[in-house]
Figure 1 (cartoon, one colour):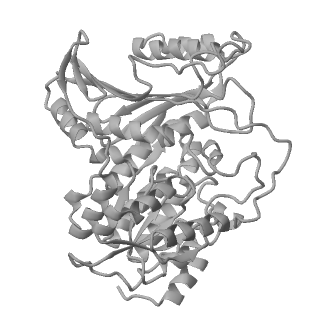
Figure 2 (cartoon, rainbow, N blue to C red):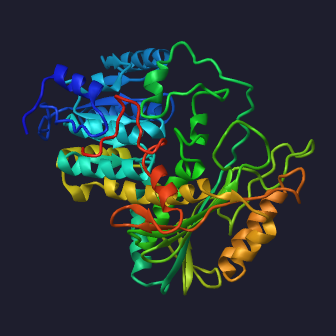
Figure 3 (tube, rainbow, N blue to C red):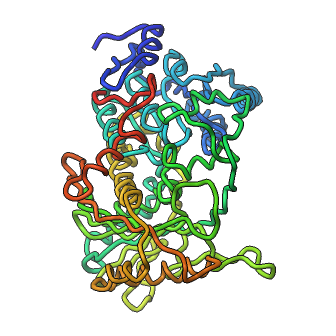
Length: 491
């Protein structure tokens, strides 16, 4: 494929529509064993700041890594990043617009820690620009976008490396191989948990001011550009569907990925979500309490998210502890006929420890990214885009069910689960948890989503509610992106 000049690349990315495919940028350097890997960091106020520190570290310098460019839509954050780089002896090109960084010939690879709604588009643009990319979790904001990242990586022969660091945990890899070999008997189900305290984000009475240092048009990017209706622009975007995916797609994607990996599932057949935003009244949209039921091509996954504590706070107990399931607050349990796996240990049916698998929680994940860039071997990428995509589909389908749900009387809800003892037990604990956090324990109602049937080959919904679900599977506004921030149908 013929390349293009830097000016042409910028022009194309500035004018591309939903159906316009970008040509690969001409500069794609072949790295030698001793060549420096020149990195551009995009979005570094939060997790991206950790990436910036890592890539500036002496250890990464010894691996031949050089930070040559940084990008953030907040000019104050950008200035701070330049200062950080200078203190570490790195002279960097600062950018507010990611498209200009992608057109920089002194950047070989990109590391992005932007909000979720930007993850896929930056990944696609990076591939089209001939650059590899480390993209933070989740890889996608919706089902359609995730598939486009997979296609872009293949078409442009680029490395897309997802920030699900547990994939670099050798002990966990050993544990899952041991389980799938039948050492605990047949796998029955996986349970994922994200019991993490999430307080109210507050209540506003109208549009809030945008900090003057921020280019809000670029911050919104592929999301609708609407007035800010929350007190804090940063981080709380997680709790709005236009930019985030609730906590199941924030912290929870790590545990969801481990669940799917552990049971060897490749596809989702159908999904159901139930939940609500309980315990306080604030501006956020996403549930702070959610249970998702997934049927896969192997065994079911049940995923529980809770942002509220064990009970409502009082003057005597201002910070009550979080709930736990068999001692697990954030993690996964793989249940088998002859026992279960949890937190680095295999247990028999009576809860007696059988075998330990030492865990390092993927501490070498970023280092492995650099090694993968040099080898360019698929087997050296523990977190390829297809796995990032398939694990994200798990929570996307559950969230879509929830979003299509309706408030339901609790007796009606209980009736739905009475023939399934496992689901009934989940519902009973759900009720107890919410009631312990509500001022009127008998008055609250859950939002109950429908079972959504999913065709894993076409990656579309079928059956009842398919029309509504398929609109939401593609972008916040059904694929109606804001030009020029368009995720293309053809990459």
